[in-house]
Image (cartoon, rainbow, N blue to C red; front, side, top):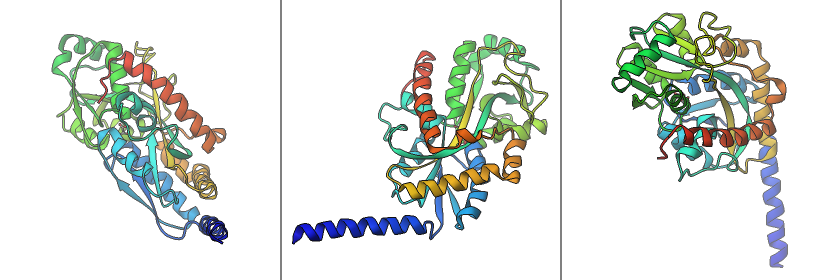
Length: 324
Ligand code: MLT
């Protein structure tokens, strides 16, 4: 008798979760952004969720949970109920570089998530405060050679994109600046514009408007081609530092165990957002790179995460990054 009851419970449970997934979403969804409001991760999240919420018919509420280079927010999201009502915006830092820098990281980027899809590619730029005493990258490198220990570099916490791409940059140019951590590169950019921090390597969607406005200096973009959003900013190759080639990405994840129907609905909403002209324009005007159609699947994102973790671990160890 007990066995029949157990079997019945299991079947009813499955049926209930199936029905839940079928009717999903029936209430607002929370997207955890693991950095302060106003930074690149937040900007990409708000642009894509604006359209996703229309497709899903429910509001997507952004919750900024900053700290520890984004790993605080991602840990919370990874441990949330896998019901589709808590998702997250991760990126090359939280789901690529972090394992190399946090030996006790409380999640495995390759195992503890249900990937939803890639949201945007975000090229990296070397930017400095407006009155930094170098007019081009060569001048910047000369200045760093002579005064590197007196210069400070902003980043969004160990393991963040700005930190890992900054560590790589500093190791290539042989610089040892003072590293100044922020809860996101939104606040870091404010200090760059206030001339209270010297430089950083950051994602184009954060710094493009301030470069276009002449409020900060951009020495180079670390991609093979210039960005259409910043046609006057030379590539690192053109500026004489071709070895520094790096681009980041932002992607939507749900916790492991999220029902496949829910994953499919979230992916469908993201793909529709990336096909929407206005959403594409908002991302591209900021220099964001729209993923190609074949890059928008959950499977493609899983492969990207696996390759990024494998890529960044030796790079950061070789660059002498210290694990936390
Ligand atoms: C980073 O990893 O640097 C973050 O993207 C910064 C941010 O989003 O604020």
